[in-house]
Length: 412
Image (cartoon, rainbow, N blue to C red; front, side, top):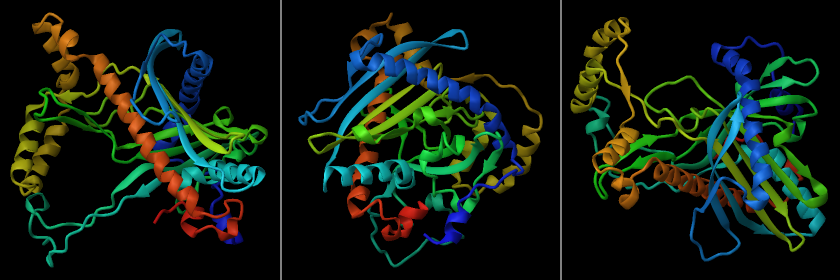
């Protein structure tokens, strides 16, 4: 790679951090330790599946894949912390070359490039009509097709790192946001790395009545992550290479109260291994706090009325209502909030004396099952997309022959 490109990917020393970045640097240690606490517990319990409760997540015909979910508890900040999580073991590929060559290639792919290429685009359905939307016509009331990038997987961007030794916080330039550093530098050059991940096409759905309207919580916002040496697996002798991270909780923003960006404690680990048989498998672990609530809707009649008017008029009245909304918000009226999903579950069991949970699986526990199944599906799709990228490159150790979109992480 040209020297100029390499220099452009260096973080800026002594940057002026934004308020958000200052908060991330301040909270990094706390959430890193929480994630490591979860990781230590999972590493201890996983070999014998000695969690408080273990249950299967999928039925399958291919024995190379396996998955289970679990409920458990850890101690964080001196208090019991209920936890949910899951484990996945997936077949990834078979060795394409000699064992040593394949081990070196897998090492480069996982530790240097995986976080750059872990999102991918699906084919874009498009029926040409010969017409395009008019700027004078509200988009909400238009049937004209518009180009839309259908992405799957995880989209990582790097933000800042803590220099090993000096403790200085260094911010990566925007031009290098997607070119995530070689993870082998964590522990050698840096104490930790903070990234942001966008989990594409990920939402939580619950239908109060089977086949009826759904409550949809789009869990697609970015989530801040922190990676430290404890999450990096670099074991050439056994052909094991992997990465992991702890989640950093973001300030509440909107109705979503749990999920990516709102975990009070969570971690994830993704480990690849080249087995003596030539098979490459992937083991993935995830654990997070059991949600105290899933959504938080403020019982604000003014916000509800203005939102309904905007929806009914396709956004036409929004500019007219903006001054009114601004003046109203300045009053900072503390309206109470409710969780519509937990509220429905609790009400259903209250009026049926618990029969809704016993006979219809309407329970908080069932919501946890659904989330973990969806988490499994998301990771299955991500690894399936990563396999396509892995096979497209003949030699991952030859940086000069790699496509620019792989080196830059900018995608296609």
